[in-house]
Image (cartoon, rainbow, N blue to C red; front, side, top):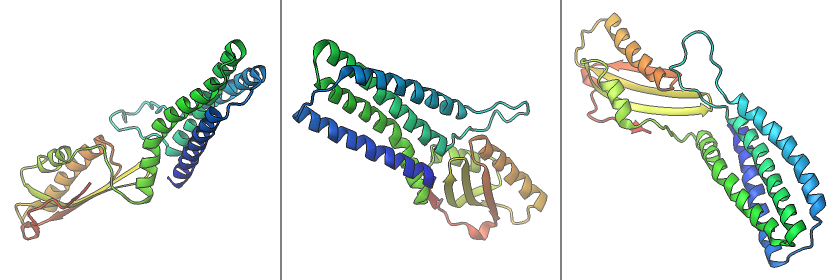
Length: 233
């Protein structure tokens, strides 16, 4: 997550700098050699495009023969950040080619700045979710796409003996790990250990189905009822 955050942050800084330079070129237009732009841009598009394509394929989940299809696939944050770098370079290179063509035929020099700003905003928009995700992970901010209602349905409705759950915490220490821990309160203090295990195993199976891969459930008796969820989502 640290590598993904630094990489994406650097990409953000680069895009903002390119927007700044594009604005300066709007104010002070410069004569640009279009043939040089087109040739260099074409080479860059091929190189960066191939790299982006390979990285995008690395994010596609494999499909082994054994049945794990119900598990959520989590893309690798470092591969995603590298892919966004290559994609940004490829798109900027496309902009260079288009600008070179317009400059060669129509002498419209500001088109270079306009396309730079357009593609930079596009990359910023697509990079922001990863920057936010990696930053929240590093700051240990609990973020999940799963609603509280969904979790309540899984936990409380898994067994009639469950009367409450509390001290719920969700952590995402990396792009491939989803941690969840909580307490459940049972209405019968005399429930056998085997029954308790069956209850928690059922909940664990349902949580694994929606993407959690490290699950800690503590079983409490009636005296531990807090009458609140104490949810940290």
